[in-house]
Length: 103
Image (spheres, rainbow, N blue to C red):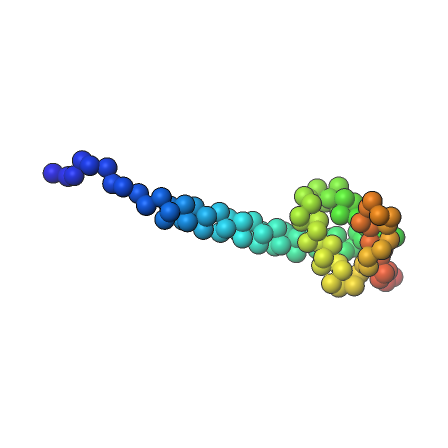
């Protein structure tokens, strides 16, 4: 009724498909991180505007996010010129707040 012989798999094809799936998952993870960071951005901006300096660690601890998400948030703050580089010593990447909250 049916052929009982096992089919041969093209190993190169299977490995290339696995690599493509891995890249897709990594891309999706990055998109989720960026979306989550954008959802948190307003809260983080309000927090940062009340500080003199900010670090990725400070954002991680305050908002319970990972390093990657904290970095996306830092990049967004830098892009909007809320913070600037150069507030810490060589051991810590601290950013100074250059735009204060308006009252």
